[in-house]
Amino acid sequence: MAIFNENVSKDIKALAYEKSIDVERVFSALEDALSTAARKYYKTREPLEAELDRTNGTVTIWVIKEVVADENEIEDPQAQWTLEQARTIDPNVEVGGTVRLSHITKEVVDVVKDPHTQIRTYEAQKIDPEVEQGDEVKIPLTKPPDELGRIAAQSAKQVLYQKVREAEREKVFNEFKDKVGELENGYVKRFERGDMIIDLNGKTEGIIPRSQQSRAERYSQGDRIKAVIVDVHTQPKGPQVVLSRTDPRLLIKLFEMEVPEIYDGTVAIKCAVREPGERAKIAVTSRERDVDPVGACVGMKGSRVQSIIRELRGEKIDIIPWHEDIVVFAQNSLAPAKITRVSVTSDESAHRPHLDVIVDNDQLSLAIGKRGLNVRLAAELIGAKIDIKSEEEVKDEVADALSAMLQEAMAEARSQTNVHDIENIPVEWADQLEAAGYDDLDSVINASIDDLMAIDGIDEETAGQMIELARKHERLEAEELGVAEDEEQTDEELSDEEQSDEELSEDEESDEELSENEEQVQEEQQEGEAASDEKAASEQKQEAPVD
Image 1 (tube, rainbow, N blue to C red):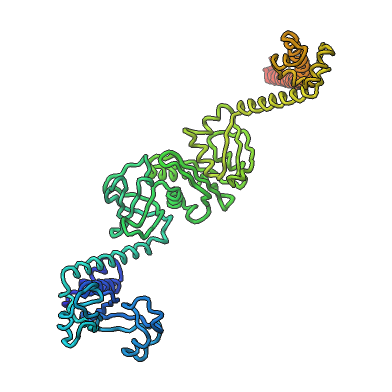
Image 2: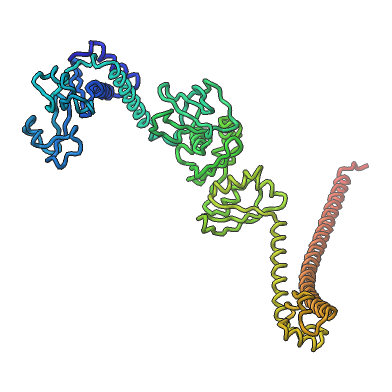
């Protein structure tokens, strides 16, 4: 049945060229559309297949039956036949193969309950006058496609559009799936609910979601833009290519474009982190000893890095020399702050190192950065957890730790001091306390007057005196401990003073040596001047005329 004129084949080829898809995919999509339209028109569940002749434009509709061994294996009677049934059509068919029929089969009934499998008697007799109720009628698939009806044509249109769209999206996916992480140039085409739609090559659209846009950047329709591809998906709606202006890979690709040493592999970028629109850090290293990686990235008078900063709309960039030693790398990463020392501890729960960084008091705010930006980027760059403390904070922590140790030592000493050893306590009181369970200094100090009054024979005044004696004994022990510490501190100060006196005496000796050398130099200069004066006088006598 001819349905195409001579221009339809050209139209299909033009469509394929316009969408940049294979011509055969368009023909296949048209065949699927025609089979869907035929299934709608004939109201059948049997699988239909349209065959389009590429040369003369004729279409043939076939019913496809899958061949199974016997009736026990039939799951769908509309789509499967037994081997015995199939060999009545094709004697050479085997199990697992298919047979093609040029008709569909329906049961002849008076009242149709399922139009997909049944047909009224009078309608069946129009096809075959000899059929009766209960028979099966074979309906030939000879209706021209242009007579399948409006509903069938609409279904065919939808299928054709869907198939072409799928082919187009598949082509885009295959084109960009290997470009994830690459830099792409495009133009801002339009804005949709805060997302930017980018025209990549005139045929493909990409999208920069709001979450992938920098807050410091503003673009208008038609502006040229550079972005890095972060994802390519096959979802049926929206652009497939997802771009980003905030991904650290954009920074890496911009450096590769601007720095020839990075492009040819002489300088390598180890890692990069960004806070889009505010600050970025990039760690670089050189494979050649004579090439400075930081200088290569900065360029003559900062020309290379300045062009990248302009592209990122003023985002500050810290170029850091990478080092395999995590301590040195941490000191470099926290620049421009000057680090006093770094200690490394393991963090097993987070599976990453933990760095304790100590800086001078005037460097603390610089190391932390605005809103913690500097230390946050450094931690992300290194891949470690960083805690920054000032020297003053560390000293306070040490002092608190020493105080806690002293308190613990005093508590232990109190617990080891027997109640009989408390100074000036009567033996009778000590025996009463020990009998009541207050057998050491610590228990007496921590007891209240009410607790001690519960002991037989002890009134409120006596209980207060007991506690006061215990506290007085504790103060005496604390004073003795403090005197010992003061003596140690005094010894240290004396040793420091002796060392400073020795240094002063050495300086005085060196000053004396310098003064002696200066006097000797002055004497030699005076002798030289006297000799030159005598020589000049003798020369004048020789030149004087003789009277």
